[in-house]
Image 1 (cartoon, rainbow, N blue to C red):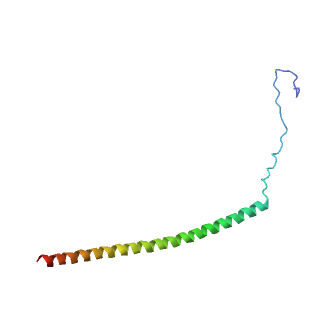
Image 2 (cartoon, helix red, strand yellow):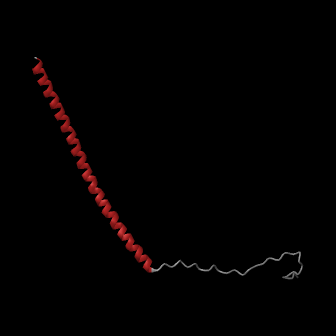
Image 3 (cartoon, rainbow, N blue to C red):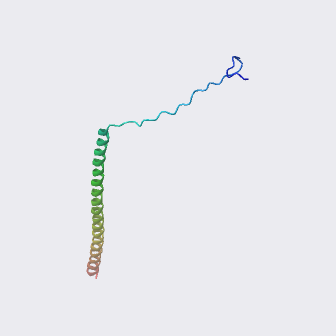
Length: 97
């Protein structure tokens, strides 16, 4: 019969540790006050984003109006220049004939 333990030093002995279930990991705890503070900051940040979004929309609308006014002004200036040039030509024709 084989002996369960050999005293022969040339025979390697396997070290078998008894199996232990892994220790349950605990989630790091964060105080509720930290969550409340972060929630407050998040609400304030969201309110700021909403305000800036609204302001951006208003500025975009103003920008469109100003662009249209610039186009209208440019068109009016072009028409005025053409009218002035036309009247100068007629005046020049009258003075040379």
